[in-house]
Image (tube, helix red, strand yellow):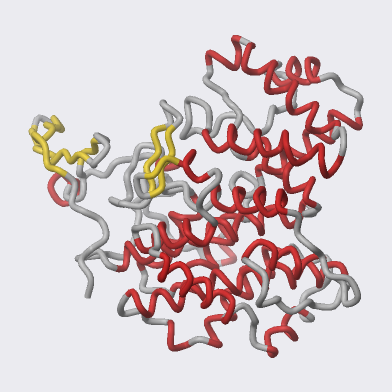
Length: 439
């Protein structure tokens, strides 16, 4: 068995808690980037109290060595590597390996893993019939979650992973087959025949081939589109303890297998406040364009407390500075969209909204900056991805992060099932009333 992937945090001078006249010493720990936390693992046992933190904005659920975020400084790093360094050199597959196994792959590891992705790309022919059980109007995310769960039925040998060798085979199957499932979900929604993966194509071109090729005309992926899609997947590959990743870890803490845990992550990502945010941005831009509203007028309405208008794509709570992913996608959008769509009015509106927001004291004082969703939807639209597939693409990108977190948690000694507490606010002791005595 390998050593735990997460090094222990450094212990510092304990904090003192004064409660009901009693003093309690609480351990203080520090991570590798100076982040500090008060360890309250024994708080209830020692004091009879719990902490209350709706939304977990101030609660650390684990220690992790995968991703570091400093929202105040606009920093995002995968295994210590700044996100900006992934613009040109690595492929999504390199980043996937990095997140899961903790280091960039050697040339041998990279080629071997790539060969596995090619070898495992097909899904069992029996699974194709399961797509027919869904109406064509079924949300692709519903199909994606169901099919990831169904994959576990075809690979029972991977329900319990004992070492990194078994993890590699499970990860390769999931990362490869999610691409095929995503493409088939798209084809099913359009009533189109399924297109088999092409073993001669790399990861991103193969996805677009299965989505857009026809039996008599194969889609050829332009290099700029491959670059843009590769970057979109990389920038969505992990983002620390977000809603869907926390869901994967929570489900995995019960001993659930990797397939079931990642299927749960898909369901969490499906929510419009999480994975659906780039769809909301695109809908906003189209609303401005169709309604012939100026960006200036829309921003004015967004600042009006009595208005229901909201400026989408700005300011996730983890960042109080520029989301570095947004800046990277903006540059690609500026290059790709004009080539694919000409003078796209939505890109022009987005540019103007960003300019206004970055110079308006209302947004500057609140530290509301563009986030990754602000430009990703425009890019996906330019490539030809329909809006109901945006979150599916997000899930494909986030899958390596989910796998890495699931494995990291499974290797931690003394792991416990996640079980948050609550503060009960319901009725006190209440007697059951027979039907005839009820008011």
